[in-house]
Length: 284
Image 1 (cartoon, rainbow, N blue to C red):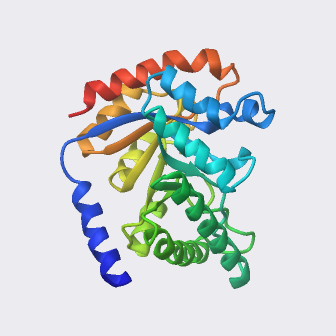
Image 2: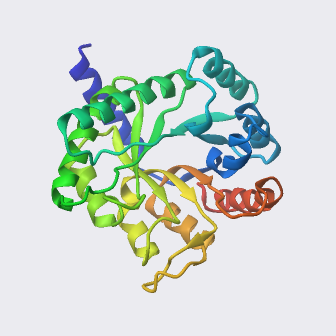
């Protein structure tokens, strides 16, 4: 089968899998342990054990503190996760696709390709990416076009490795749900979707989440949300959010990304218990 036919056939399979009853699984975002990972007080191996102890299914590995991208680090980590029944289903990387010159955008593209290779070696089927920030003096429409260009080219490479790129609502060019939907539709690839962060919209979060939910392939749960028009933070209504996922037919992970100041080692277990209960409540 040639490459074009392979991608078309795989796209059809991806689309078919998206329909039907909800199937919810829970996960931990490595970013929750950012200070401990940065200080080397925890390792990525420890996260696998943490997933087992807290009875979650998967890990979304923020790559910022990877000691290496060599096989000597990646493959033992993959094996450890497999032997413990934990799926490394996603990695989260930095990117800025709103770069004003073709050379800069090519550099961003090459960076995404590098992480696609890493994801494939870990067995992860998803990468969280950022759209970036609109440069001063440039229009948002122009910058959105750059994101479409980079994502479209990156999707060809990611698709050939079976990896989906999830564009996160992370401020900047992706501050508004309508712009995210526009970008994803213009790229028009089964290998580009949305990484939904429930805590990142500046206001009217529930309404904006509803707009991007049909395009979402990974969901990161936060403890706080800006749920109304005031822009003030309030406790996130996880039951409401999980019900929204279920009613949309979402199939995938609900990953806890803990950003509060208290020690995640003591604060996260009860939150994960709650997330596990909600996944069970609303799953098919």
